[in-house]
Length: 128
Image (cartoon, rainbow, N blue to C red; front, side, top):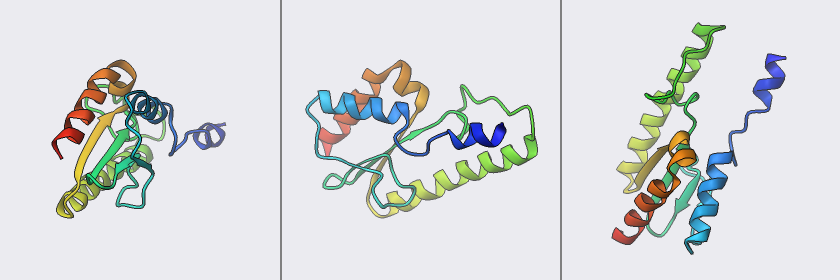
């Protein structure tokens, strides 16, 4: 049962990602790529502006507000989740070193306050 449940969790085209892309589209923002081949495979990339956007899941990336430790196989899951967080930091630094603007949003922000997320992205697009 657990294996089946975990296999149903998507890595790409998650609900918050799709919501964010639809909101960008509705604002007339069209010049982006999805899952572009950069470190960490950003969810949305503006190549010309060198902006990489990640939508991080609250559980998988250890959101400071919403994260709850798993109740079963705690050692296994915490090792995996902590390695995700370390990889996120490494990928962010690598992208920034190469001149990219890296934006990370928590899934709860996209779900609950999408207008704030869009405003931040639009502001960054207008600056660069």
